[in-house]
Length: 168
Image (cartoon, rainbow, N blue to C red):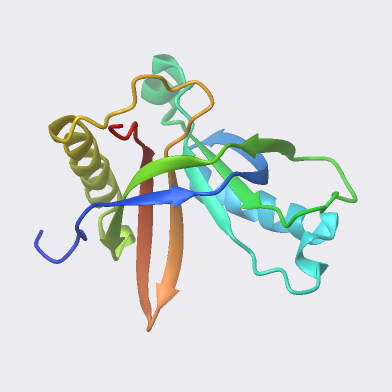
C-alpha cells in the first residue's frame, strides 16, 4: 500500500458553521451527497458571491447491529461549511457550529479504488499516530473526525482529520 497514504501532520482548523444532514441507507454517502447538493441549491448557498463549496463528511455510528446485519444499512453525515453570515432560505439541514481544534491529518490517494480498505486504513494509521505520540483525544464531546475529498490533476484525494490533544 505504499504511496497511498501521506505522512501524518498536525493541522489547526479554525471554528466554522456548517449545514449537516445524516442518512442511513445501503449507500449513505451517495444518498446524502445528492440530498445536500439539492439543499445547497435550494437554500441559496451555491448562489453566494465568491463562495467556494466545501463539503466534509463522517460515518454516523448510531446504526443498530440489526440495521447493519439484516438490512445492510450504514450511516453517513455530510456537511457544507457555511460562509460567514449565511442564513439558508429553507430548512432541511441542521445548522451546527464546530469549534476550533487541532487535528492529526492524513491524505489518501484514490480512496475510492478500495474505500472499505483504504479509508479504514487511514483511520487506523492516524489513531496509531495519536497513541504513539501521546496526543490521542482524552475527551470527545463536541469533537468530530471528518473527511474532505478534493481533486487535483485528475487524481482524487481524501484528507482525514482526527482531533488531538497536543502536549503543553
